[in-house]
Length: 333
Image: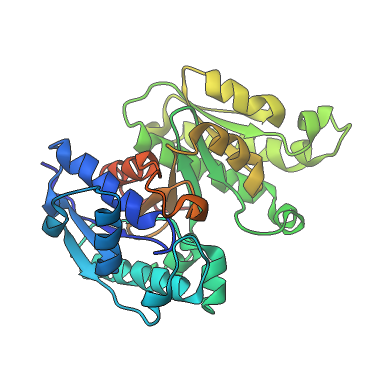
């Protein structure tokens, strides 16, 4: 039995977070690879029990270790609706779960989905989980990566306007992203002898030799060359190849079909997450790199449209919890 303890924040109480949390834990405990001592659930106890009873999910919920968090206005929350009450509650669940790690009551954190609209309505000035946890964990730098069955992903920029993302990109930023991606892939696949890190083009057809822009020649290619030199000097990166720049419109398809373990860089949010979520919407895992502890989450959102239906798939949450047991914190360059 794995001795690691995972803290799970149950997400926005108006969304599917409580449901997928309970479903995932039932699946994992019933597999007999984990037991109740492996998990601490953080959330509103009444809501968790109501969701469990309404959808007849689990007859042993009283055996779960639940850290109850009470917040004002919880009785005013309506399933499937954005509110300041659910935003404030979800933030307090995250904060409490992070405190469990600081006090060493838990070793890693898995977060159920929250609503950025609800956070904003509650007056909480963060873009999402990644930024909240960076502040709570005191991390100088964090990055967002994704684990999937078909390929993996590293976001070089996250939640910002495309015009702002393009201003950030330079050879040094891309170089560091490649190296950090290599560390992530080696930890995901410690025994693999065939790993690719793909740098797609930023422009159509990877600029086609300067026909549609010069970023490929000016910043991407120098970053790839520098990263290749770095990886060759470090034995742990043996058998990790860096490919690119290659046209983005075929890079994701080739990664999907490749027999090798593959990670693609994404220069802006939707470049990578659109194809990733098309293939992994109910299975992928979001990983925050750079924190002093492991944090994973499902790669989907609160799904307010089905929040009261009991039909939410727990697969992504199951995968997020499993991955939290496997990974160790990654120090970024």
